[in-house]
Length: 224
Image (cartoon, rainbow, N blue to C red; front, side, top):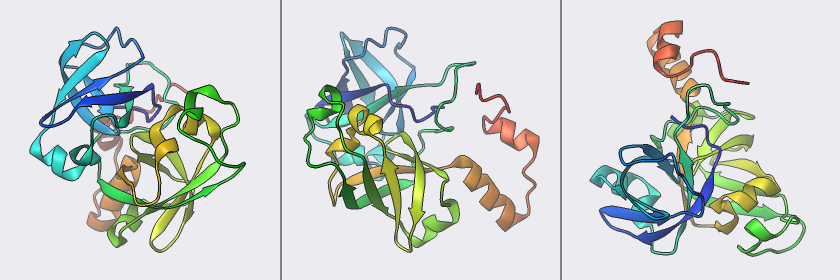
């Protein structure tokens, strides 16, 4: 389980059935067998050499996520799994993405910028990013609700018939790969688990019990 708070933007050094990602953050506590979210996809570390981690990809992961389209040199968001007792600054993210959706629009403010500004400037502009949605997605989407885009915990600002709009603060732009996204690019989307349980309760009549929430990881103690 993750929280959607990105710890580093890594660089893909090798693609294929096994992907190798270089990171600038010394994840000293990570070992082979641990889970790491890569652009929101929960993967298992199968090798560590220096500051690079390797992950094996299942065919399903390649087909159903943006990792199937990744290229050497691409930047990816990295987050290690949630530790017991740690604060949940975002929302509960499971790393089981619901689909790949397109960026259909970007509205920028405060002028132009380039990828180098992510770590080097305090003047990155606020911007909105529009993500295309499918009809079946609507049941999980509410204005001001949570959503994970490429593993980032974000808040939905507006809901339209075929898209959602998300506001991106400068900190998010400087510390994730969303700064580099453009119209037509694809992103991994994971809808809020609470929305999924509520939808199931509504459609099946199954009670949303404390036991069901605990099983899903909602212990009632978020650390806030």
